[in-house]
Amino acid sequence: MASEDAAHPFDDPTADPAEIARIAAEQIAERTGVENHDIALTLGSGWGKAADLIGETVAVVPATDILGFRSPAVPGHVGTLRSVRLPNGKHALVLGARTHFYEDHGVRSVVHGVRAAAASGAKVMILTNGAGGIKQTWSPGTPVLISDHINLTAASPLEGATFVDLTDLYSKRLRDLARDVDPSLDEGVYVQFRGPHYETPAEVQFAKTIGGHIVGMSTALEAIAARQAGMEVLGMSLITNLAAGISPQPLSHEEVIEAGRSAEPVISDLLARIVERV
Image (tube, rainbow, N blue to C red; front, side):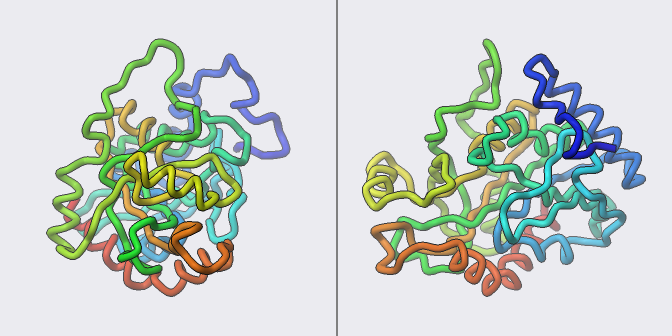
């Protein structure tokens, strides 16, 4: 059993992230009774109820009981790993303990959930988040598919001479499948900033100028790690607010939480229907 009171495995710079993920996967299998998971989901702000809708919960495990995981630092995120049996007999691993880059625990901690999911057998990684929208046609509560990303963290989960093609990082197949479920879904390029402060209006305009449509503080690093692990990635953002300088109102985390709470029933049902098809 892991504990945050003990030394964390990623505190050791010589630790092997793949080995830690392998051990974590073994512990997940032991604690859930499920040897292999087929799909993994990280449920960001507003997406949490999807875990109740996608199938039958088999087990819920405190994330800190599993090697390498940390307690979530953001209000609105649960601190558990949940194993769910889908109606088609497959199993989904729901990661409710996301570590954000701005928490300063290092990139290895940020992407550990993705790597543990891959080591657990997952071939599809669904990454969701609450984010700011640059398109004025997107009102708060709008779900948007991620078609690509721009990583402005100046970091990567890849270490050493590791070269991974990101051309089709956000799977067109999965985006098309999502639009089969809801043809009204729009898509855009996600821009990950470091955070935890919200972007300035000038930074939002910069993101827009370089091709961004969505701004946030997660997802891109996780998606890269998922691709390195050979997973197919579906990314979705809930637009919780218009970004700074686009919105006439000051930004606040309370606004993000409230927008997520209001949209949660609709977007969670949407995500559950997409998972059915994956």
